[in-house]
Length: 94
Image (cartoon, rainbow, N blue to C red):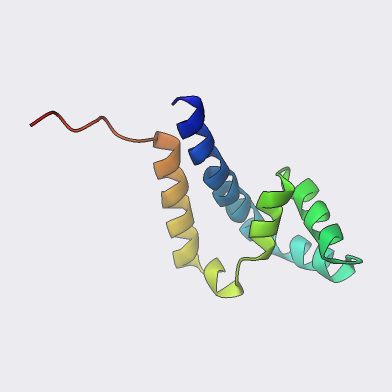
């Protein structure tokens, strides 16, 4: 991957990885949200907990609860795997 494509893939992958990590720590994240002084404090706390950026933490906290079902988890995992594999080989010239 070159720099541009790698950057284009790495941020969505960071968000997917953060969401997948958050699903397993939903109770901790809920407790942090309830204890946080304000939204920015919650974002920073969750970013530290998940070891991710504040932008990815914000994406996690903006995720609706309905997107945390097992079916949604499978879709997130599949999308993360697809991004990790990267684009397939180019189509042969016709």
